[in-house]
Image 1 (cartoon, rainbow, N blue to C red):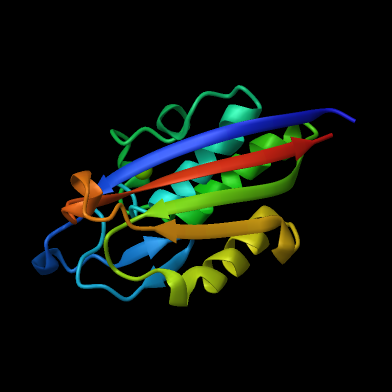
Image 2 (image 1 turned 30 degrees about the vertical axis):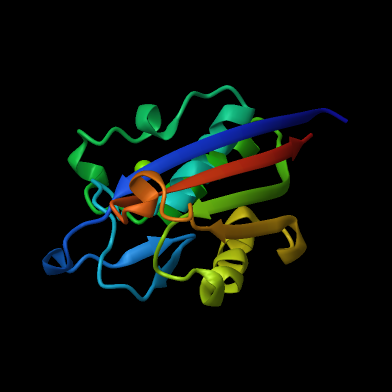
Length: 161
Ligand code: MG
């Protein structure tokens, strides 16, 4: 059996409340007064996960596959991007063993939404719930995350074939 590991990172700036953007993370809408600024729906957790998947199979990053200069991806549903990335991975014969992710955000509190994210991502990745972990931390007020300017995400995936 062959194994591959991949890592992904993303960060997005919060929009203004007046922008009325939903906060999408892990394919779930998290109730908050500010969404994330992005060309797509701004789901930074899915973006990090896509980059981890692409990284594991040496296919670059989501910016290469879904350029933000392409109007086709304006306000794109990141769950659909993830399904397309998973398709590329599966076409090469790989399947997901597990995924582990971290959200760094000063607010809102992620804990009430973690299980919904795991469930949604497990469905999208076509794996059991216990193969997907999502955790969240603040930065104790430090840096751009601590100042609530935006949030960042990390993802690691293991693939086998
Ligand atoms: Mg992104």
